[in-house]
Length: 326
Image (tube, rainbow, N blue to C red):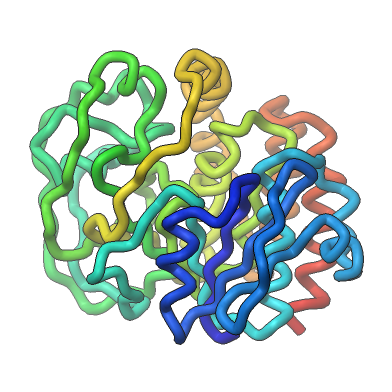
């Protein structure tokens, strides 16, 4: 299991899962939940039922809530324990194109725009569109994103885009109900100090970035991977790595959502993003990635940005992480 695809689902085997398990050099790990319909194991797929999860010996298994997207954390740890060098993070409704593939974890095409936040969709599209988690007061910025060639930089995480129904917020979907296809362009990397939201839907993580995979479980469902992404960007920089973006290599046939429910669960994004970024920018970090992760969550709690329940879960993650990454 050198390269693992981690998905959580409550559905029967979807088209996306069927397509991903065709890649013989990847192993699909499906994390089940109490509502999940069992999926049969095969040489390219492992389904972890609730009962299977309890047998893994991970502290986080009992710490995480049931019927919750962040049970996915168990799949990350399982993949690490089984020897993964790369973890691909995706959902059961993101279907790979024929050209879906893993890029080398390096890039010399650097975004050089000003400002703390980059709307990367402006690089891949001329449409008025922004990624979920992008500050709403900046969405009307229309400047084209420019890049410059540099020596190859270490990429810790590649975020690929998704066509047709990309990762946008409920406000966008309530205003504009249309399919969107991004331009096929060269990959880009963000420099230190520039943030862009990234998600858990078409995302490749190199082994050095595995500690930052933790999905916070005590925040809202629509904020969990966005908060994880901002934290990961800051911690990547402290480890000499960067976040990169590449063209859409999947298309999404989105599962049914209640958009007003999504909107309510995204309010944390709209209200807390700037405070989170301010905290991350001011926080002094050292070289130990696990200690840095714990420090970030402790400070987020002390500033009232996450509930206290999160601390015990992230502690369980760090305990398990220390064991599986030895």
